[in-house]
Length: 115
Image 1: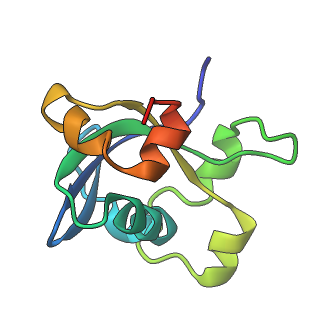
Image 2: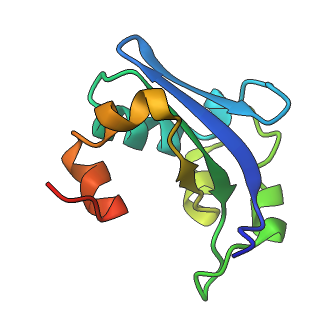
């Protein structure tokens, strides 16, 4: 599937969450809703998540056009966050973090991992 988004690496630690572009530009402040969800589901665990930021349209299909409204916005207003919802589609868990991530109930359910 073509996600039609932008690559993002999430670095999750007990100290907080950092989001980075494929060019290693920090984009944490641009996607506060992603940071909030990652903080909740990782619960202070250290891990890397490799994925794609996507902005679904009214048909739930990824729309790069919609995502462009959020790209390069350092501190999006709550109204923009509501208008252009962004999701992180995680497609890779580096091996050093897989075991730790598999202990998170939300991640297990989302990835259909056995308990």
